[in-house]
Amino acid sequence: MHPVRVRSIHNRPQQQGPVVYWMHRELRAADNWALIHARELAAERGQPLCVVVCLARRFGLAACPHFAFLVHGLRETARALTTLGIPLALLRGEPGRAVPEFVRSVRAGLLLTDADPTRPKRQWLAEALPRLDLPVLEVDGRNIVPARAASDKREYMARTLRPKIQRLLPEFLDEFPVLPHQADAQTVPWTTPLPRPDWDALAREFGPPPAAFPPGEAAARARLGAFLAQGLPRYADDRNTPVAPAGSLLSPYLHFGQVSAQRVALSVLAARDIPPEARDGFLEQLIVRRELAENFCLHTPDYDTPAAFPAWARATLEKHSRDPRPHLASEAELLAGETPDPLWNAAQRQLLATGHMHGWLRMYWAKQVLLWSPDAATALERCLRLNDGLSLDGREVNGYAGLAWSIGGVHDRPWPERAVFGTVRSMTFSGARRKFDVAALVERWGGGRADRRQGKLP
Ligand SMILES: Cc1cc2nc3c(=O)[nH]c(=O)nc-3n(C[C@H](O)[C@H](O)[C@H](O)COP(=O)(O)OP(=O)(O)OC[C@H]3O[C@@H](n4cnc5c(N)ncnc54)[C@H](O)[C@@H]3O)c2cc1C
Image 1: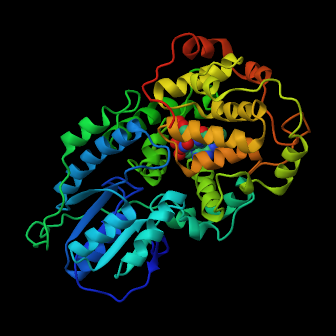
Image 2: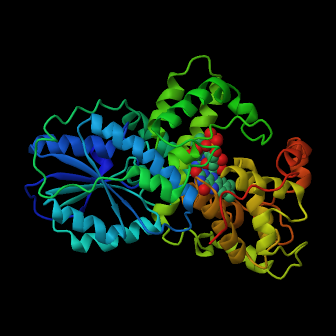
């Protein structure tokens, strides 16, 4: 593994004892740099390795379908780890306390964990580190070019990050090594029995996973295979067409770490007969845009507030804050997808029914909420609750960057001035009609009763 992927976040004297990998973002056995590194360090030290996952009581606005997706996927990951001789311990409770207790109970000598700049994960670490008296390493297994290596500051836009990523990509876009079997793991006595998950009880507790997205590493690979065959060849032409879209639909799997973006990129590069503009267009989203979102959250502590917007956007939104709104939407209207705009309703109903909304619609959807809210702060807060609470891929840096782009001009530039938006880029119903068959989309999602399986927003 490239040494830049790993950094020490808790400098304590080296100790004897098992190696523990606290997995919370990259929830997979395959193609996982933190797991690979943990395995190497355990072998060097002649110590056993175990993986620990802690299911928090609450995670932001995550609801039952999100936990179900996680738990069902994790069950498969635990099986894959077992075949590698690596046990998985599952904890419940507050991770910042439960993980240090676990680490103490097994007398671990070294802890590794996933890098993640989002606030709940920062809080977990802030609580955990003072309770830990062993070295802790953080591994960036999410980004192909590790976020801290790509840039040490908040990038202005994709144009400024792209050359930095492109320069470093050959160094990092390499094949994963095969993870060797941990032959002696079962024979090394753990000081206490590891807490084994009761998967059936968890499945009953969280219910079935969302029908539109079967969870797990195998399902992610199947979806990738289908995309390479059917979506990727026409990605350049149809990516932004919400009717018969060409997108990969991999975002929930990427968000829960059930597939590695590096594996997706390697598979795309190995695919045959793909038009170069389709391949490059997809890699731009998967690598540059996705890693730009990580850069945004890593270097912007208030990434989910208007304080994260650039000064020009804050000023123009303030200047237009008293502009009359064409409509003031209520929370209930938004949640149910019952606004006066049939396209917006179709987008919201797709989200309610499937836990997913097409990428182009997401931009339009967030911008209309700005138009119908008393101010930008309220619009952002409403979109965050809807996106994080209903989208399977929500609570993700891509979402925070996408909302900040749509409402607050982050990673964008000023556009001609309009009511309410000021110089933040606007999107209109008539613009959508020129782009794709709006009536077909409305017929697909807008006619029927919304499926509320995703549950109510908290
Ligand atoms: C308002 C708004 C909210 C969004 N919320 C989320 C969210 O909660 N979670 C999420 O993963 N993405 C979010 N996005 C980004 C993007 O819309 C989705 O990643 C994409 O639509 C997912 O569908 P896909 O997997 O078919 O994408 P594809 O087009 O197949 O792209 C492949 C992967 O590249 C990444 N990607 C694609 N577009 C972007 C982008 N614009 N920014 C960053 N990464 C990107 C995603 O990981 C995606 O799965 C949001 C965008 C906007 C404008």
